[in-house]
Length: 192
Ligand code: ADP
Image (cartoon, rainbow, N blue to C red; front, side, top):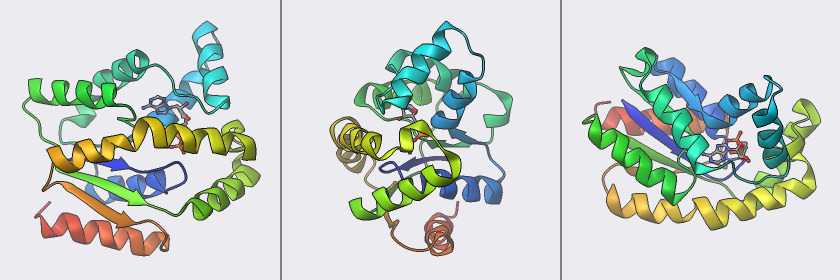
């Protein structure tokens, strides 16, 4: 099963992707986590990545496409996987389509989590108090939301039209458990 979790920063994609990954026993590929992990290497590349990420800017498509094609090729992804944070640009979406086509794989569901902007800001601020992620600072949240609106949100139109049957919208303003229930219901409804 191949799922894409889609939505603005702070929508709860990571939390929901984790729950579904545990439920279906498939890997959760969070590009944010993969990149943050890469920062631990403390080399020239990690310095460049950290600078972009701390400012709420996107990392280049080439790097992300490389990361994802490598992960999808790994053995643990043979029964499916969940994408969270990727694709984030049109270029990444086109690239993903091409690798899935070449492997004869289909996206089963694209789960677009919709959340009000007030809720996004509130959630990220409280996460910052706990996790201290540099990019969760109030002035950076704005940049990330703007990046989302200009680069990522247009992908929802692309997917909505290209994957009419697979694309679903979920109300992300609800409690974690209720969102999880809604997602599982949708997947079960499709015999997934
Ligand atoms: P969020 O979705 O809450 O913004 P993530 O943890 O998914 O946070 O991503 C953190 C940062 O990692 C992003 O702001 C960006 O700099 C980088 N990043 C993650 N995924 C991608 C991607 N697919 N393309 C470009 N940059 C990415």
